[in-house]
Amino acid sequence: MLYSEFLRELEKAGLSIRAFAELIGMNPNSVSNYARTGELPTHLAVIVVLLAGIRELGGDFRALVSKVDVAPKRPRGAARSGHFGGDRQADLDLDP
Image (cartoon, rainbow, N blue to C red; front, side, top):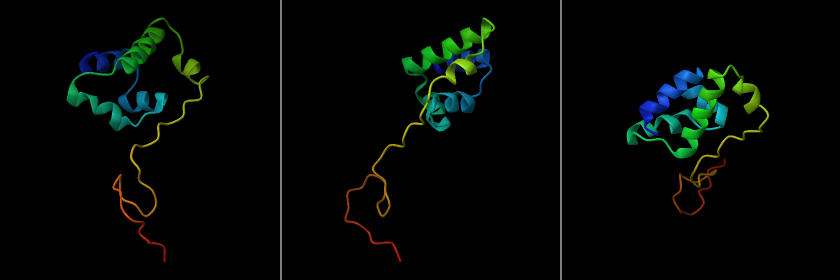
């Protein structure tokens, strides 16, 4: 699905990019980054089309989605205390 079509479907569903991302447990920046490529992954396209369709039929998709325990996606990378990003390096003793 083209990103422009995605935006039209979001409008039909009555959602902003931020609201859509929060609904499915994604970072809003991750969703809006697809504007650069111009295309959306199929799984996100299916979700937004279903949400728009439910709303057009007069249904409440929020009540349906609330039945699923949507866990936010974990950030990528190997960052942890004392390390930078995914760089492999010796432990930095930064604790006072």
